[in-house]
Length: 95
Image (cartoon, rainbow, N blue to C red; front, top):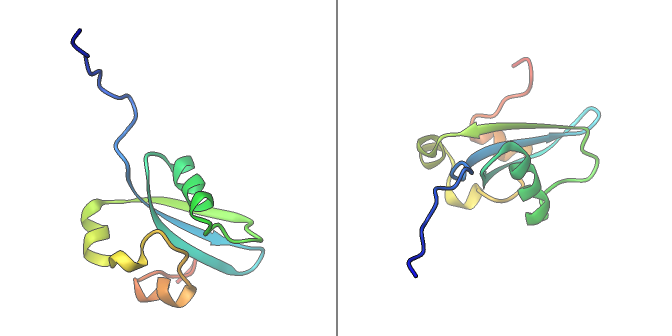
């Protein structure tokens, strides 16, 4: 019997920028691959990089071209410090 492939209704996995903040401080950021915004946040838990004390999460899609151009492989799938995030062009709210 021939197996028929049906197209997936799930979007292809893309890159996401996930930024974490506490009550009054930046706690870190990460670039992770996932299909959706909730999946990107779950991915940070799976990788063990979701920091303690999170009050707010910002999660934005990033194009493949942007990730390749601006984010070195070694800075993906890990929690980045504020210094590392700023080195990549990150800014605080209001800057």
